[in-house]
Length: 230
Ligand SMILES: NC(=O)c1ccc[n+]([C@@H]2O[C@H](COP(=O)([O-])OP(=O)(O)OC[C@H]3O[C@@H](n4cnc5c(N)ncnc54)[C@H](OP(=O)(O)O)[C@@H]3O)[C@@H](O)[C@H]2O)c1
Image (cartoon, rainbow, N blue to C red):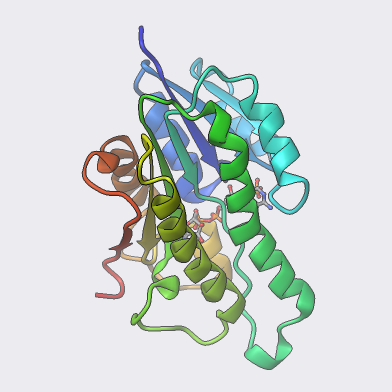
């Protein structure tokens, strides 16, 4: 059986956890789930035969951690950089630590994960999907308090275009989805009481489908996926 290996970074809760469960429904998929919270991944994924989960922290030694996980895989067909860190603070109160953590987890961690994946990406065709935000998409409505988060998500969009240019002659494709509001713990923590028009599960449905097929038509594209900010 020709299995597809799908790596999901940021898999312990929210959209990432839904992605893991969705991909795992197909026995031709082998799902690699990466996050810091291994007990939560164990609770959710233990007993699902085609899911393996590993401790993974985007805030330090990302290249080494990713290389150690990826070197045990025969190939990677799909890599979804879904993890995200959101700090919601008035601009004058943002600390250097807030900015550094946002950029480390949301940008540098993503770039280093991709660097580590390069030798293992399937030479016959691989799709890297970066998860950004509508806040990082040029020309959209912006929200006060999200300078660290949204500027870092804009950098992920830019990285997508730059990588796609550098790898345009290769079989590796990279695209970026800029999500609108989806009902997750991150959203609830940042904007308590706000009701998103899309559930985490529903958002994961679109991302999973796009990750499996989108690279047949697109490369280096920044795509808004939003009901909340039309
Ligand atoms: N929900 C929304 O409305 C919305 C809107 C626009 C964009 N997005 C983007 O969509 C993605 C998923 O969001 P979500 O709402 O599902 O978020 P979430 O509920 O907070 O889940 C985020 C995931 O990222 C992981 N993560 C966070 N920091 C990490 C680190 N240092 N190292 C490794 N993993 C880390 C978390 O796992 P651990 O804590 O176990 O590490 C968790 O599994 C994010 O990139 C987010 O920015 C979400």
